[in-house]
Image (cartoon, rainbow, N blue to C red; front, top):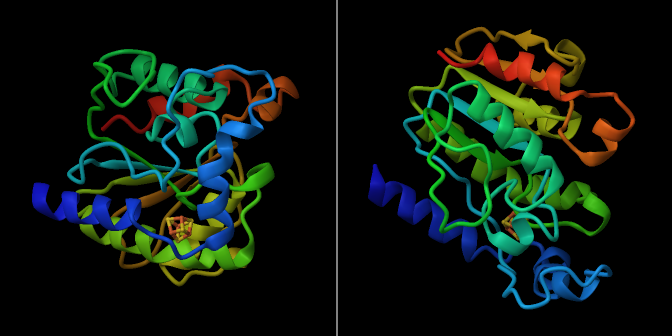
Amino acid sequence: MNSMLEDFDKRVISCRKCPRLVKYATETKKYNKKNEFVNEKYWCKPVPSFGSLDSTLLIVGLAPGKHGAGRTGRPFTGDFAGEILYKALYESGLSNIKKSISKSDELKLKKVRISNAVRCAPPQNKPTNNEIINCRPFLIEEIRMMTKLKYILALGSLAHKQILQCIGEKQASYKFQHNIKHKFPNLKWELVNSYHTSRYNINTKRLTYEMFLEVVKELNH
Ligand code: SF4
């Protein structure tokens, strides 16, 4: 399993299918208008998933944030969306500490793997259709390798659509709705929807921390 994971991660990190995103990844640091993290070396590559392939829960976000995962190289690490996500995982018994700071910290996930629909940071958090399609095979492969899966938690409608495309299901039959579980014929896992833990969603109160915690707590089996 470990060599399978290493091979998969290597292929993700070395992927260059989307020229716009490859270029953007190498330039993310210059978009840091607040001049935070000035002394840090940015990751500047596609961001591999975090957590064991033996996990029962796969969490799928939209894409790495340019100064979060795009900087640290670990999904949801180093930005606001990640603070909400990792706190909820900790409070649901799914990790050992409530913060994810860097790839070299002490954080260990329990039965959880965290990924993204698109594995490179896109400008304005908006990948193009082609970029979404380009990245889909990684998620298809990841889902196939996770033989113990019980739930996939889609954070936001783009992740939801990408997962449906991965399994050949239609959006019209499985509409995105917060805190809803979708079952599929012939699949052992269920697709769970939540609004994304983005700063925008929290600031506008579309999603509160308590709403998100309620969703995550249900998935610790
Ligand atoms: S977004 Fe996905 S397919 Fe495109 S370059 Fe990054 S890893 Fe490769």
